[in-house]
Image 1 (cartoon, one colour):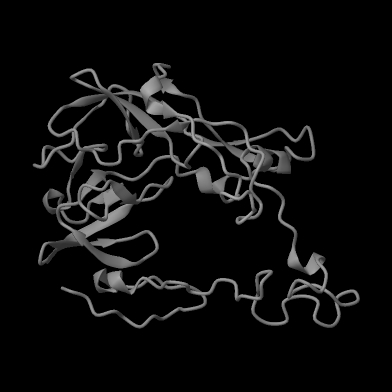
Image 2: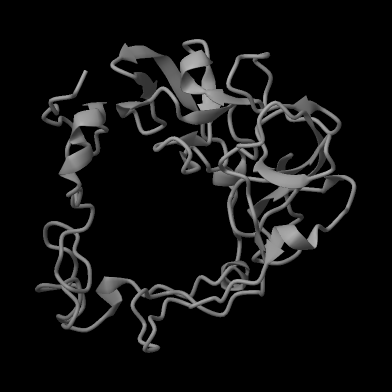
Length: 290
């Protein structure tokens, strides 16, 4: 897959960059792996908008992904690589030797007809294979990592993402480096998939026109400086007075944008090195269990 530039036949197509994707392999739709999910459009059970800028997207079906990889020691063959409207990464349809079909997140360089396997013992370091973290060699790039063994993958599921396994840390944990730069401990019994997630050009796309975002369910966002005095950035004559941020950028309710909102102190003991940001380039380290 690669980025494709459109011919500038219209104003919106000038500068547009989109990922060219064509389904690979057989075009077989497995009904049991597709579900209809109600779209709330940012509204709660009372119909009140609780998340702004959502609504009016094209209908889509949810593809059931095998995040647990609990089909152990049964080889499967990559049947097709497909587009998934619910995520940035592509998905791969796997046909197992017992006849069952399952979807997984497609890693980079996964080929049609390639055989993959999930096991508790290390077979081979091939892209798409899934093993517990304790048997994967250090410095290996992995994706779809479980936080709680048996609960399914939580970490490393977006396009182009990979997590580096740094080695065994002791007391039943391994040390991994996240894409954000954070270094943390994860249970050595958690499952992970070898390789990095494919479709790494996704972040380089240029949408080109508002209509393409509307089809994805993203409604327009009005700038705060274009609003009245009711917004912290608005009001004033021209661009005088309080018009504009005039300090830290704020949201419509006066809260500071980009503020660190982490409150989950129960998992601090697993974080060896915290991620940094422009607002907090240096962080106070946590006391870890290892």
